[in-house]
Length: 123
Image 1 (tube, rainbow, N blue to C red):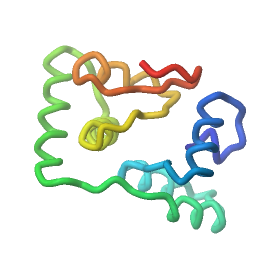
Image 2: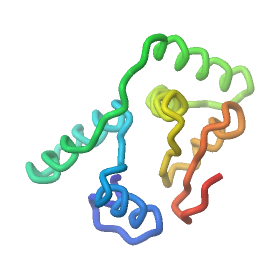
Image 3: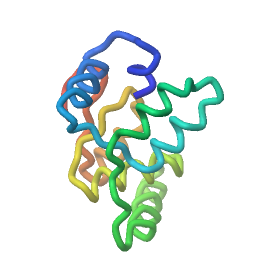
């Protein structure tokens, strides 16, 4: 989303653009927080972000996210808390994550998170 907002090129940006157009784009709640935390965010971009559907936090989410992060830590990965919450949201709703952040590959390996990297390949 950040690359899309910043007008950067890339297959991932094209995916986000198409998902916005066909209203299939969804955001993890933590992504909304991250996006709205930008002090330079314009009111029009903020309004656009707030129009996107947000994935529901389902019962047991916090426990699953904590266990997921612990599982990665046991395997000597170093997952960020926010990344763990984003990954768990995607796993709960069985949606792929479009990202440029290769840190999510650990969630892919350990938990089967479907990740669409900037190159546009679902992994």
